[in-house]
Length: 457
Image (cartoon, rainbow, N blue to C red; front, side):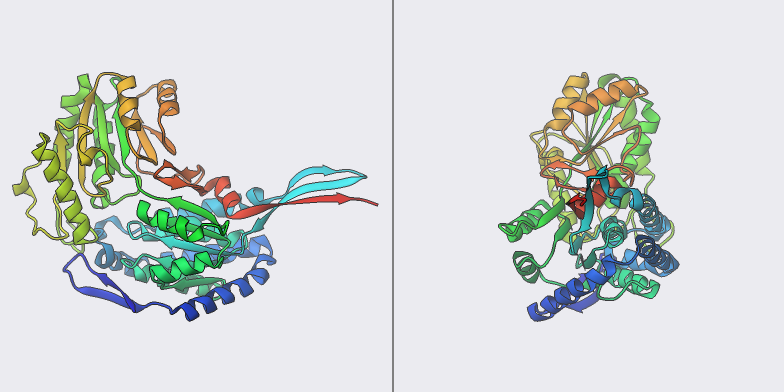
């Protein structure tokens, strides 16, 4: 059996790779577990240095990686790839490692030494998505390795070359091949390995249905799971907001990467006095985009990663219009072929009976609604099965914090959106999943506490 990456650029087969048999997968697990103990006893600074050298090696490949990403998942080359965020997150996690992984000293007296150490889980499975394939993978790979775990990376079938490049870069840096393995696995084998307690920790970024499959596989094994699943992230423009800045950031957050961002903006609520100004600005921004081949420098909006993703956005948009929504972007500005290339769209006269305002779209469409006050905005923002981020626009920090406290979400942004701060825990609630990556909490989730109660003679 093989996995196949069909390029969204032209529908051609770009990459095929054979998947491991169950026997081969079990062998890979055994190698990883055997290698992990020696890796964990290496000095922390040595592990940090090797990981950061691997990160730098990825950066040295960036000129090759950028067009490769365009072919695999469609992001325009003009944006230069992901190394900025990839490096920022790695550097931050390396910088806090010593403090985050240090024992918690409870007592060191003449009678007792009592402390809590952070111990690696052992072998960690990272199942990474295609939309930001380098940054989402490194969120777990770097801190897991630094904490003393061995790692198996299973990347999405849409971006199979990403795991290969990361493994090549880290091995060249000196990370042992069995400590960091890139593997190609089908769903059945992945589930069988989890059910067999092959891993001490599994981190999965993907769909809600995928997260449920992970939980089902892990049922009864007590395997620790980190799950970042769907999102329907809102933006709220308050009556005292800088409407121009809000439109610039929120529309970029809705449309960048063809809307295929975990924390992309999928619905916007605007205070009634600012509604028309905001909508006019949003339309002018979107009308300036150029949809086309992502290998061309002038392209600002490339194809979606797969035709079926584009078709789902088309369906949600059409249903909304049929139910009374108004589409503001003229189709003649963005000729498309009905395939992976999908025009951007802004919808008004929308409400929460429409799927486009309730279900994950993960594409270049956003609905905008006017609201009377904070209470109505909070009610609508919470009227969702998801909770990853929310973006609030106001100059009043106290007001933003108060509204943020009332929102069911993992991260509250004020006057920004669609950014992952490695110093803060990346987490969600409801159908967005559970657990937390990056920050000190990321290290705590990639290790287990071990208590020492030492009575001195």
